[in-house]
Image (cartoon, rainbow, N blue to C red; front, side, top):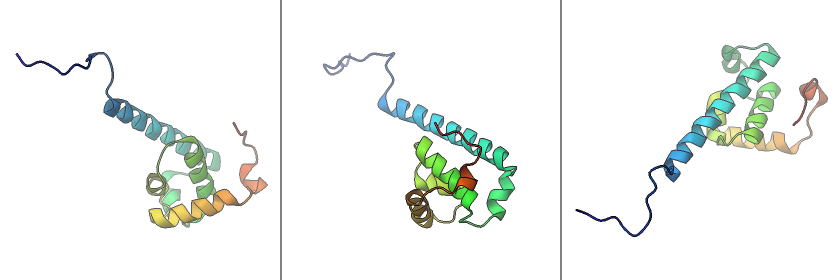
Length: 112
């Protein structure tokens, strides 16, 4: 019978890989909820993300919220919002984070 190393193996403990996968699923679910909330707020559908220009201020606002409130990478945000390539999305999101938010985009929203 093969013996395990001296470390204590707890069958109820979750492995780091399993906890990472659970966090990733949770982050993607949260991102989906945020996108859905924002699309409802704007009166848009999923198709509007495709038809709008890639630097649409409302799309950037959604991207910034995803960046602030989830652990999604810029590449994942760019893919979900169809913001062009991840490199250009990174540049645009970074620039948007540095400039002050216009009141028209934040009207009626409560910041947490």
